[in-house]
Length: 171
Image (tube, rainbow, N blue to C red):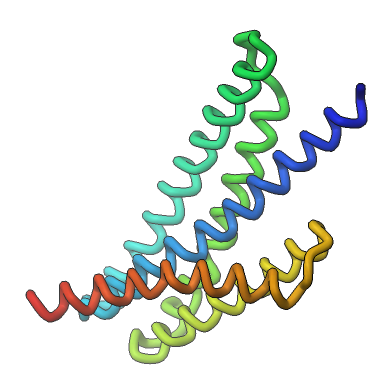
């Protein structure tokens, strides 16, 4: 009885970590790229990134807590809070918060012209590494896992780039 519960808790933590890192990389680089392409000043890009990381990390942590505790209540039929939901929320928050600085860091040290491609490249590389790491844990083909994460996450990044380009063209 104890073993399936521990496995479920590990899966919950793993799921929240993967989701937090992936969503942070994609969302942050998407927003930063969209704003950078819209030709705003570097201070605005940096401020946008910092606010996004703080707000979204907290929001994702809260969302994780609420969804995990709701799922636990649904399964158990009891309406009680568990430590597992809180831990999952902390993992989500931490994963999102730390990962958000991968696409933001180039804007701290470089001008927008050089920071934008480095931010996108760093995020795509991090997605690929996350996919490989995930593959080691799930015993899947590592390159296939890496490319899967890279392509799906990369598609979301392209959306941010297109949105920024369109907004820049119409303003």
